[in-house]
Length: 116
Image (cartoon, rainbow, N blue to C red; front, side):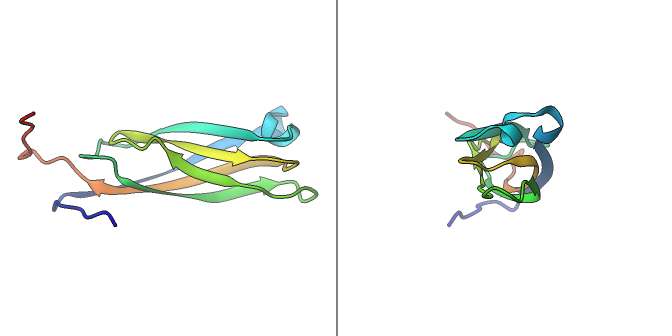
């Protein structure tokens, strides 16, 4: 469990269209085997330290004739942002995908001192 030590708590959220590969014949729609899509996300303002980030698939358009495989995660979370990563594999054909995210964490305070 993460304990938040401050009275200044920030919440930021957003939505990212990860890809729309059926229009361009991209790898998520035409490929097979392991594939991934990465999108960098910057927070509206930096947190004091890396926040907790929750991600979710909010639009999933896939071929009904193949298996639907999905792994969505937040990687490399920093106080300024993170990388949103979608992965699929095998014969899955994903036409497009949108992901939403929510970040909750401590905000910097003007009374914080850096004495390092």
